[in-house]
Amino acid sequence: MPAPPRRRDQPPEPTPNAAARFIDEHRAGLGAIVVLAALAGGAWMAWSRLGDRVRGHADLVLDPDAVVLEGVAPWVRADLKMEALRDASLADGLPLDDPEIVRRLARAFDMHPWVREVVGVEVRHPAAAVVHVRCREPVAMVGVPGGLLAVDADGVVLPSGDFSAESAAAYPKVAGIATGPRGAVGFPWGDPLVEQAAALAAALGPDWSRLGLVECRPAAGRQPTAWELVSDTGRTIVFGSAPGHEQAGEPTAAAKIGRLRGLPADGDRIDLTTPTAGEPAAAIPGGPGAAR
Image (cartoon, one colour):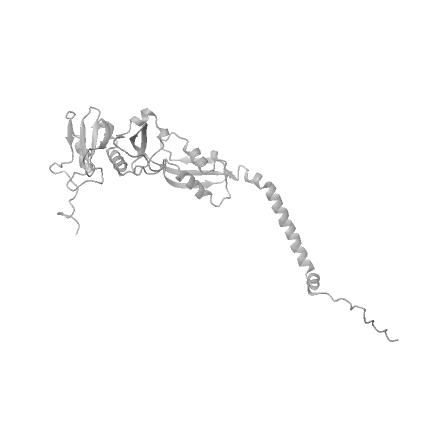
């Protein structure tokens, strides 16, 4: 018996679209993706809740007490390690999984005004680190209104809080400086006179106290700058140019210091700027023996 004819208003039977066919054909793979996504989400939620606790574990965080600082000079009285970590916002510890941990530690100590150089940083497990530094050495005290400021051989200003009145008095005093530091502690003073005075004090070294010297100052009315040394007896010694600034024909700093050591105890004023026979002097530009 023939099938009855389809009514004109009866809709055709639906056919599956492309998306449905794709889902039906890849049902297993999509299920695996959904499972992996759920696992990743759960892991993220767990880490967000427990991550801080894990980072805070003693074996995973570098605590300040586990940082060993080597090379601190005996004249540094401050707690250099804690000051450096505090100023770098590392006093609460540093995660060992931080890929920048060595650089951040080196930067923290390099920024401290007492540190001349960070020689090396070694991070160990469990959480520990060794930092090797080389400290700046004070060579002179520059007189300023209200007190003294310490400088190293390069004229870098050092933390004055590390010096008592007694310890500061043991260093050469630089007088006649009209400027104040142009930068913060740990940076150069910014005055060529301070740099010259620091170089002179560094060259004299232990001879300063051995010769009974108490002060160095720019000689009045001398251009280029000549330096005077004043002894504890009031005697004035004209040293002349600072080391590295000698004028043509002037004795070298080493020659002048050698003469200082042999000076008689008496005498009011002595001038070391005139060379004696056989004494080495600064070369005269363009003169005999000059490089061609």
